[in-house]
Image (cartoon, rainbow, N blue to C red; front, side):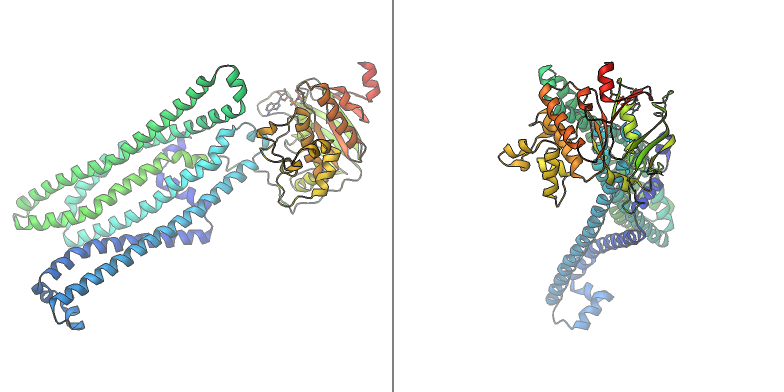
Length: 591
Ligand SMILES: Nc1ncnc2c1ncn2[C@@H]1O[C@H](COP(=O)(O)OP(=O)(O)OP(=O)(O)O)[C@@H](O)[C@H]1O
């Protein structure tokens, strides 16, 4: 991170924008850049044209004196100066209408371009986190995820992409004006440069490092605010009962106060360059006066030089100001760029639909599987081997931390074994057959994930075209159909945040119905550890019993033996090794 912050902001910004652009989009970006320059030139021309037009139009003699206006006057054949003035005024109005329409059109093209790019970056960020290896993903906090996927792309578009367009179009304008000055009067150019360079350095350098610090701090604070809000939601009851509402609110408000104060500071700093530049412009007039009187020894040229300097300053000073402001904004967003580049080198585990297929007619073999978590000395699964026939129901027991969930996570390819392999009908599971594997296997987690949505959407995971017959089958198998049918609007009933309107057993059975909705052949059930009341226990056992009558191959991680009644075999794990294999009856007899 430290090294990254030392890099030149323009190079870093350009590189990060180019990463997201296809070659077609790069061409479009160049086209928008040309449009932006054209609109700036049209703006300059518009303002520059006002003074001569007004001067010439106000004096009939000046029309004759001017080659340009005289030619127009004669060519069209005006009879009076008044008519000519009317013509000039109408032309001016039409020009300004067209000019402003053009500038607006350029803005629209730019906004549309950045709008599409913002969505593309959100898409890319979503994929990056979605396909991140699970052990990395599980270390992230929800608030950072929300920040990185939703807030960071918007900040990148506003704080980097738009600023880059602005920066380069201003650079172009400044170069044009400077070239004009060199051609007109190199001495005047030299003095202007002597004035402008310190102005840039004076304004930019202190503001730049401050902006970077502000940006980095805001980047840290934003996720803290999101976390405070998420905690308020998830722990509303506990927080209230513990009387900690004020404490939690204070964390949020303190964070927000600091963010607002930093934003205000950042705004004040953005005004600073403009003020410094104005002071320097006045200083420049004094220097030009001295130059005209002392070096050119001609005070007539003073008026002319001041005029030219004023004209140049009128256009160039705001440009320099914008140049500085845009560089400062980019510097403030360098942590946003860093955030986007995070995990780029990581091998993402993508699930492609056109992967290899999987045949499951015979059985699954766990062959010498070993797995350790990163940074842990001892393996969680230690050279473990066993075979399961198709249709078998396997119970997995063992003390807390013995590796039951980890083993199933390897079967579900959420974790990948460091040695050994899982063979399905003799074919090893790997990244090429993962999509087919996911069509074969279903999973009911310890604490089923439930959305604040209807029962139907929770079972089908928001299928756009749900198979209602399959939903009925799944609800029946999960022993939840009777309950759903008793509700006034059945499966269209909303279940609240994390299924707040349901009992523990109902939540778990919706999770089972979701797994069964997918027409799978293998089901992994990680039974809830929390003490279940006898009614809930009975409801879940009933659901397991019903599924056990099918040909589905089942792995049941159980903490209560009643869930294992229908298992063909029970494996006991200890420190990642199978220490016992028995039948349900043997297990009951031994205990
Ligand atoms: N993401 C992780 N990073 C590091 N260690 C982990 C991670 N997940 C689990 N562990 C550790 O691995 C070991 C096995 O955990 P696992 O969840 O597989 O146990 P378990 O037998 O399913 O336990 P329980 O019955 O309590 O659910 C535990 O010591 C746990 O602390």
